[in-house]
Image 1: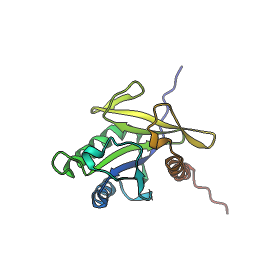
Image 2: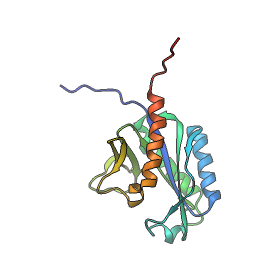
Image 3: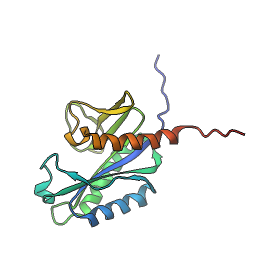
Amino acid sequence: MGRINRQPPVKLICGFIFREQPAYEKAKRFLEKKFGPLDFESENLAFDHTTYYEKEFGAVLSRKFISFQKLIPAGCLAQIKALTIKYEQELSRGRNRLVNIDPGFLDLGKLTLATTKDHKHRVFIGRGIYAEVTLYFEDKTYKPWEWTYPDYKSAEYIGIFNRIREFYRLQLKPCTLHT
Protein backbone atom coordinates (compact mmCIF):
# COMPACT_ATOMS: atom_id res chain seq x y z
CA MET A 1 0.00 0.00 0.00
CA GLY A 2 1.32 3.44 -0.89
CA ARG A 3 1.97 6.02 1.78
CA ILE A 4 1.48 9.73 1.32
CA ASN A 5 4.74 11.41 2.22
CA ARG A 6 5.37 15.04 2.93
CA GLN A 7 7.25 16.78 0.11
CA PRO A 8 10.30 18.69 1.35
CA PRO A 9 10.36 22.34 0.35
CA VAL A 10 12.13 23.15 -2.91
CA LYS A 11 14.53 25.85 -4.14
CA LEU A 12 12.82 28.55 -6.21
CA ILE A 13 14.83 29.62 -9.24
CA CYS A 14 14.04 32.09 -12.02
CA GLY A 15 15.60 32.46 -15.43
CA PHE A 16 15.34 35.76 -17.29
CA ILE A 17 15.71 36.63 -20.97
CA PHE A 18 16.10 40.33 -21.71
CA ARG A 19 17.82 42.90 -23.89
CA GLU A 20 17.83 45.89 -21.54
CA GLN A 21 19.47 45.50 -18.12
CA PRO A 22 17.01 47.90 -16.36
CA ALA A 23 14.09 45.61 -17.27
CA TYR A 24 15.90 42.68 -15.65
CA GLU A 25 16.69 44.77 -12.54
CA LYS A 26 13.02 45.79 -12.14
CA ALA A 27 11.84 42.21 -12.49
CA LYS A 28 14.45 40.98 -10.01
CA ARG A 29 13.45 43.63 -7.43
CA PHE A 30 9.78 42.70 -7.83
CA LEU A 31 10.56 39.03 -7.20
CA GLU A 32 12.78 39.83 -4.21
CA LYS A 33 9.86 41.74 -2.66
CA LYS A 34 7.63 38.68 -3.17
CA PHE A 35 10.03 35.86 -2.29
CA GLY A 36 12.80 37.42 -0.22
CA PRO A 37 16.55 37.76 -0.62
CA LEU A 38 18.61 35.93 -3.20
CA ASP A 39 21.36 33.46 -2.46
CA PHE A 40 22.56 33.26 -6.07
CA GLU A 41 22.67 35.53 -9.12
CA SER A 42 24.50 34.50 -12.27
CA GLU A 43 26.46 36.83 -14.47
CA ASN A 44 24.85 37.94 -17.73
CA LEU A 45 25.00 35.04 -20.17
CA ALA A 46 24.65 35.37 -23.94
CA PHE A 47 21.28 34.01 -25.03
CA ASP A 48 22.19 32.77 -28.49
CA HIS A 49 20.82 29.22 -28.66
CA THR A 50 17.68 30.31 -30.54
CA THR A 51 16.22 33.32 -32.35
CA TYR A 52 12.73 32.56 -30.95
CA TYR A 53 12.56 35.78 -28.87
CA GLU A 54 14.23 38.20 -31.32
CA LYS A 55 11.00 39.38 -32.98
CA GLU A 56 9.61 40.45 -29.61
CA PHE A 57 12.76 41.58 -27.79
CA GLY A 58 15.23 42.42 -30.55
CA ALA A 59 18.67 40.88 -31.09
CA VAL A 60 21.62 40.42 -28.72
CA LEU A 61 19.73 39.01 -25.75
CA SER A 62 21.01 38.11 -22.31
CA ARG A 63 20.05 35.41 -19.84
CA LYS A 64 20.43 35.42 -16.06
CA PHE A 65 19.47 32.99 -13.32
CA ILE A 66 18.67 33.69 -9.69
CA SER A 67 17.71 31.58 -6.70
CA PHE A 68 16.14 32.57 -3.42
CA GLN A 69 17.24 31.84 0.13
CA LYS A 70 13.75 30.92 1.29
CA LEU A 71 12.52 27.48 0.27
CA ILE A 72 8.97 27.08 -1.04
CA PRO A 73 6.36 24.32 -1.36
CA ALA A 74 6.58 22.67 -4.80
CA GLY A 75 2.81 23.05 -5.14
CA CYS A 76 3.17 26.83 -5.52
CA LEU A 77 4.77 26.69 -8.98
CA ALA A 78 1.58 27.37 -11.01
CA GLN A 79 0.75 30.37 -8.82
CA ILE A 80 4.30 31.73 -9.18
CA LYS A 81 4.26 31.34 -12.98
CA ALA A 82 0.89 33.15 -13.16
CA LEU A 83 2.39 35.98 -11.08
CA THR A 84 5.46 36.27 -13.32
CA ILE A 85 3.28 36.37 -16.45
CA LYS A 86 1.26 39.22 -14.96
CA TYR A 87 4.43 41.10 -14.08
CA GLU A 88 5.90 40.55 -17.57
CA GLN A 89 2.76 42.18 -18.96
CA GLU A 90 3.06 45.13 -16.56
CA LEU A 91 6.64 45.70 -17.71
CA SER A 92 5.73 45.40 -21.40
CA ARG A 93 6.13 48.10 -23.97
CA GLY A 94 2.94 47.79 -26.03
CA ARG A 95 2.61 44.15 -27.07
CA ASN A 96 6.30 43.44 -26.56
CA ARG A 97 7.67 42.22 -23.28
CA LEU A 98 10.91 43.69 -22.00
CA VAL A 99 11.75 40.61 -19.97
CA ASN A 100 10.81 36.93 -20.03
CA ILE A 101 10.67 35.35 -16.56
CA ASP A 102 10.88 31.57 -16.30
CA PRO A 103 10.26 30.31 -12.75
CA GLY A 104 10.98 26.79 -11.69
CA PHE A 105 12.30 24.84 -8.78
CA LEU A 106 15.23 22.66 -8.04
CA ASP A 107 15.32 19.74 -5.66
CA LEU A 108 17.91 17.04 -5.09
CA GLY A 109 16.72 14.98 -8.04
CA LYS A 110 15.58 17.40 -10.72
CA LEU A 111 15.10 20.89 -12.14
CA THR A 112 11.45 21.58 -12.95
CA LEU A 113 10.31 24.56 -15.04
CA ALA A 114 6.85 26.10 -15.43
CA THR A 115 5.44 26.88 -18.88
CA THR A 116 2.18 27.82 -20.55
CA LYS A 117 2.85 25.45 -23.45
CA ASP A 118 1.53 21.89 -23.32
CA HIS A 119 3.50 19.02 -24.83
CA LYS A 120 3.69 15.23 -24.47
CA HIS A 121 6.24 15.42 -21.64
CA ARG A 122 4.57 18.18 -19.61
CA VAL A 123 2.02 17.87 -16.82
CA PHE A 124 -0.82 20.31 -16.19
CA ILE A 125 -0.48 21.81 -12.69
CA GLY A 126 -3.36 24.32 -12.73
CA ARG A 127 -4.05 27.92 -13.77
CA GLY A 128 -3.19 27.14 -17.41
CA ILE A 129 0.35 26.16 -16.38
CA TYR A 130 2.35 23.00 -17.11
CA ALA A 131 5.43 21.62 -15.40
CA GLU A 132 8.40 20.08 -17.18
CA VAL A 133 11.24 18.16 -15.58
CA THR A 134 14.02 19.77 -17.61
CA LEU A 135 17.09 18.20 -15.98
CA TYR A 136 17.59 15.19 -13.72
CA PHE A 137 20.40 14.61 -11.22
CA GLU A 138 22.57 11.50 -11.64
CA ASP A 139 26.24 10.71 -11.04
CA LYS A 140 26.85 13.99 -9.18
CA THR A 141 25.50 16.31 -11.90
CA TYR A 142 22.34 17.44 -13.64
CA LYS A 143 21.72 15.81 -17.01
CA PRO A 144 19.37 16.71 -19.87
CA TRP A 145 16.50 14.77 -21.36
CA GLU A 146 15.87 14.52 -25.10
CA TRP A 147 13.36 17.41 -24.79
CA THR A 148 15.59 19.72 -22.75
CA TYR A 149 16.06 23.15 -24.34
CA PRO A 150 19.51 23.44 -25.99
CA ASP A 151 20.71 26.20 -23.64
CA TYR A 152 19.77 24.13 -20.57
CA LYS A 153 21.95 21.32 -21.94
CA SER A 154 25.04 23.54 -21.91
CA ALA A 155 27.86 22.89 -19.45
CA GLU A 156 27.57 26.53 -18.33
CA TYR A 157 23.91 26.23 -17.29
CA ILE A 158 24.38 22.79 -15.74
CA GLY A 159 27.26 24.21 -13.69
CA ILE A 160 24.96 26.97 -12.41
CA PHE A 161 22.26 24.49 -11.39
CA ASN A 162 24.79 22.18 -9.72
CA ARG A 163 25.99 25.16 -7.68
CA ILE A 164 22.44 26.17 -6.67
CA ARG A 165 21.73 22.52 -5.80
CA GLU A 166 24.64 22.57 -3.37
CA PHE A 167 23.14 25.62 -1.60
CA TYR A 168 19.85 23.74 -1.42
CA ARG A 169 21.47 20.53 -0.14
CA LEU A 170 23.12 22.45 2.67
CA GLN A 171 19.81 24.11 3.56
CA LEU A 172 18.18 20.70 3.97
CA LYS A 173 20.99 19.31 6.10
CA PRO A 174 20.10 19.43 9.78
CA CYS A 175 22.32 21.64 11.90
CA THR A 176 24.60 19.57 14.13
CA LEU A 177 26.68 21.12 16.87
CA HIS A 178 29.72 19.41 18.27
CA THR A 179 30.53 20.41 21.84
